Image 1 (cartoon, rainbow, N blue to C red):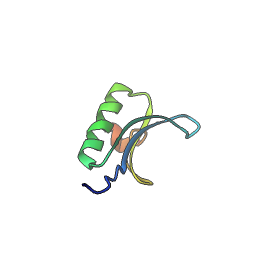
Image 2 (image 1 turned 120 degrees about the horizontal axis):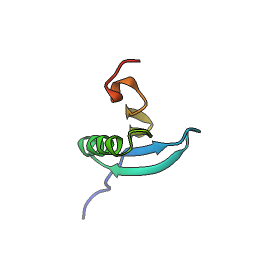
Image 3 (image 1 turned 60 degrees about the vertical axis):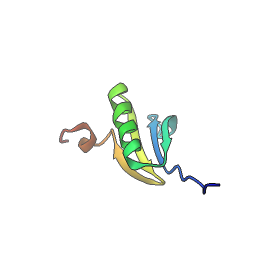
Image 4 (image 1 turned 90 degrees about the horizontal axis):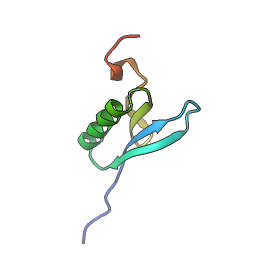
Length: 71
């Protein structure tokens, strides 16, 4: 049958102690991960949410870029 599917993209909510509190999405496509990240940030604007590909952070709701404003 098919090969192994790599589910490398994760959308996660972080606590103030830098511990993962909730996983919103785990997927194999960057576009799906980005959509899940944006929906999660819209639903929980006061939470720290990241989109990661392995250890690399692609988007971070705590950054000025993700919020659309300058620090």
